[in-house]
Amino acid sequence: MRFAMKSRRGPHVPVGQHAPKDLKEEIDIRLSRVQDIKYEPRLLAEDDGRLLQLETPGCYNYLYRMKALDAIRTSEIPFQAEARYPKSLIGKNFCAYLLELRNSSTSFKGIRKVLIDTLLDGYESARYGTGVFGKTEYLKYEEALNELANITKARGGSSQRQHQSAVKDLTLSPEVSNPTTIQVTYLPSSQKSKRAKHFLELKSFKDNYNTLESTLSRRMGMLEQGS
Image (cartoon, rainbow, N blue to C red):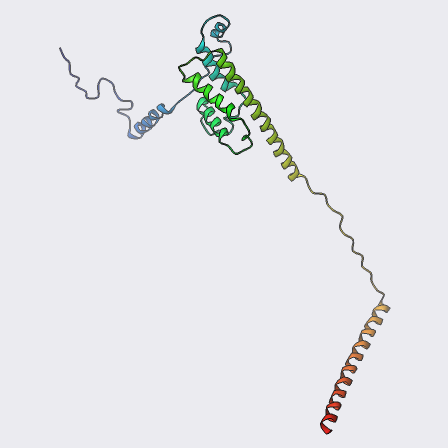
């Protein structure tokens, strides 16, 4: 015996069906954001009872996988310092940070490519891999993670000290140099009058000389024409 539903939408009522238009649009907008909400929680707490199983014989690869992912969160690698990605996406941020380091031309260019590849491969194996990821693989991954953390911490501290030194040099006021002393000698009034008198006498002598020279030139010209 078959039953046909009268409602084409089924037995469920859409959220905000009889709400005002503005409210319904706001509800639809917020519901559409649900699919974009992503969060990567901590997988193993420090007091998680499952960690005690690692001290007993057995295969606990899934625990080492979770420890590898949690190690990224607890490391001192500043892959979230610039806030380029949402803080909730730990793994995505970490992989993007490693790829940026490998292709970077900044002060971190000297980091060994093998170290970055080890971390990328370890993360992929721990999260998505189907092979074995046990204690040996985890310790290798943890060692590479600590090495990168030490390198970034050391270089980050060095660049910060250089920045502080540069700021200190700019803020220091330059030493005020002693002004150059210019010594001015003033002549007595009697010497000033003598110098002015000598200047006038020299000018008068020069004018008389020019007059005499022009007179002699005219007379010489007249004599040459008469001869």
